[in-house]
Amino acid sequence: MPELPDVAHLKRYLDATALHQPVERVDVRDSYVLKGISASRLREQLEGTEIDSSTRHGKNLLVELTGGACCLRLHFGMTGSLRYYRDDDAPQYTRVLLDFDNGYHLAYVCPRKLGRVSIAESAEAFVENEELGPDALEIGRDDFLQIMRGRRGALKTALMNQQVIAGLGNVYSDEILYQAGLLPTRKVGDLDEDALKEVYRVMQRVLKASIERNADAEEMPRAWLIHNRGKGETCPRCGTQVRREEVSGRGCYFCPGCQQ
DNA sequence: AGTACCACCTGACGGC
DNA sequence: TGCCGTCAGGTGGTAC
Image (cartoon, rainbow, N blue to C red; front, top):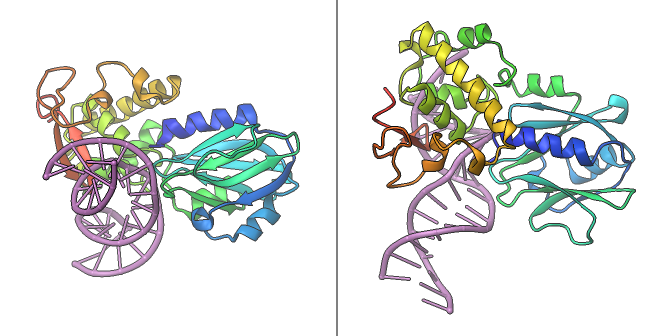
C-alpha cells in the first residue's frame, strides 16, 4: 500500500532506470486511471520528451519532463507500482506503458485502479491545486505544531488527511501512534505541546527508518506494530492482544496497553 | 472550514 | 471444487 516510504522507493527506482531516454510511444491500456486528461492528450504530452528528474510530494511521484513544459503525476493508490523491463510482455495490470527508444519500457501497474495518472504544469502547481499539506518528511517541527494546533478531530484522522500533512496512510499512521504511545482516537486539541513534539519526532524516525529499508515491511524492526496487523496478534512490547477498531473508516490497529 | 461517511475498484481469503 | 461474501485502503464527493 504505497504510502510515503513506498513512493520514495519508487522514486529511487524511476531515477535509477528511466531517466534521459526519449519516450517513443505511450500506450494507455486503461484510461480509468487517467484524471483530467484523455489518453490521446497524454500521448501528445509525453511522446518525444524525456524524463528529466523526479520529485515526490506525499504519496505522489512528480516526473519532470524535458523542457519543463509539464510534469507527469503518478499516484499509486493502494496497489500501484512501477516496472522497468525489456521483455516483450507488459506486466499484468499495466494501465499505462511508456516505450523508450532503447527498447526498454516503463509500466505503471495498478491492479485495483485506485491510483491516478495526470499532467500538471509543475510539481509546485500540482501541490497547490490539490491543496496538499506539507510533505510529512520535509515539514519542520514548528510548522507541524502550528498545523496541528486548533484541530478538533482524532489524531489519526489528522495524520491521514493529505490536506493537513501529505504522505501518511493507514499503516504508517498506526505505526507512528503506536510508537508515540497515543491512542488513534485521541483528540488533537487535547494533546499538549510535548505530546505533539513526540508525534513529530516519532513520525520522522519511522519514515526515515522505513525508507532506509526500501519500505519493505518484512525488514522493519521486530518491535514495530506493522508485523502484528491481524486478528489475534499481540503487542511486540507488552504482549497485550492488539485491538482493531474502525477509525475514520479504516481498520485501525493499536495496543490498548501501550497507547493512552 | 473542518469533519464524517460512503462509493469506487478488484484480488485475496475464508466459509460452506 | 467452486461459489459467495467480506476485507483491504487512498481518494473524491457529499452531507453535516
